[in-house]
Length: 193
Image (cartoon, rainbow, N blue to C red; front, side, top):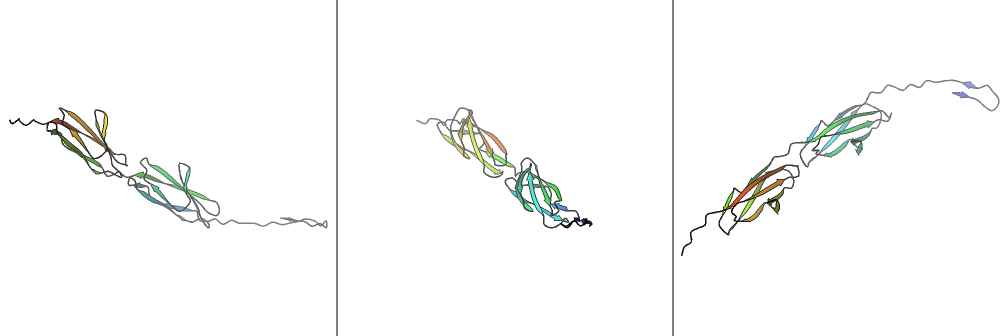
């Protein structure tokens, strides 16, 4: 530093050394890679050791900021993704790490349907789709000759010489099952006079 006054005195110069201590580096501990059940969520967390002072946090997904806290609630990811967390201390040193988030295999979607059915002449019968497993809301679609004839678990059909009804069921986890039911006309009872 140099000091001078307005009385034409000679400038006086001196110096001082400033030492920045070597601080302990930051070490991050993260939630392990996580497979979340379909339609579920999980909390990601980062813990920090070392560094200086208070920490700033930033969670990103594909460079888009998702949160600025030590924890972050995330949904299941059918296509695995990396959440990146960056932690900055008061000396503006930043350390980053990531967590792989995916979707756990869903509970299998199982479909059982009415067996192939012979209906009495001029009669009708219900065809039923029974579903177990799957995740979330189950959707039903019955088709006949390429046209939708029902969107509920059961439909009523008429006797026919030979017709095929197809049912497709799907869940919110992306699972789909299909089955066919053949409908025919049963033997006609003898005419009694």
